Image 1 (cartoon, rainbow, N blue to C red):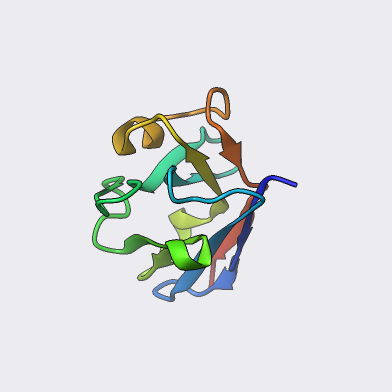
Image 2: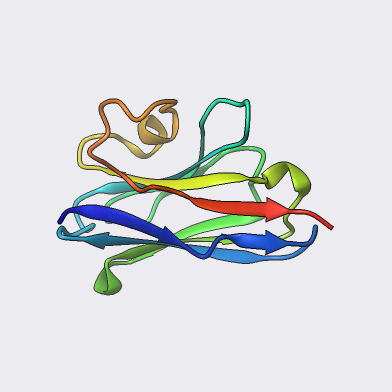
Length: 129
């Protein structure tokens, strides 16, 4: 079965850290641009960070620059999102997505699932004291 599986979400205090994982099953991530997205209750889905297929170039939203880092381990067929200095406004369901054709910025600009090859089911991150 072809799917993306997110893990690593949970509850953390403001200022804390979490690392999210996005594992591909049934296909290889090598040829895909990968992105992390989030959606808070009542808000539109937004692209958080995206990473290219091969040269390691990344894009991050202004709201997470300097705090979140996306990186990939092709040997493990997994992409990670390291989240530091978490804030209450980072609370959301986080999704990963993979696509063969989008550019890094193109994928991160997506607001819906339409037209993207694969989406995971999401993992909840709650930042609260």
